[in-house]
Image (cartoon, rainbow, N blue to C red; front, side, top):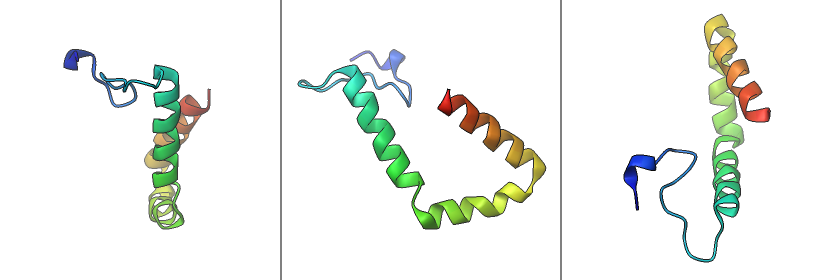
Length: 66
């Protein structure tokens, strides 16, 4: 494994039996299932009343949807 290539969204290790594409798909699914829980969403919504936080959140969501 080359840990110099490690990045949060693209791991340095791909288990045998999975392709990198499948691994990324599973990672995305786990990420969304964790962070889109109702309690977590509600806790994060209270910060969106701040204009600067709202701007960064919208930019982040836009990047992820493209």
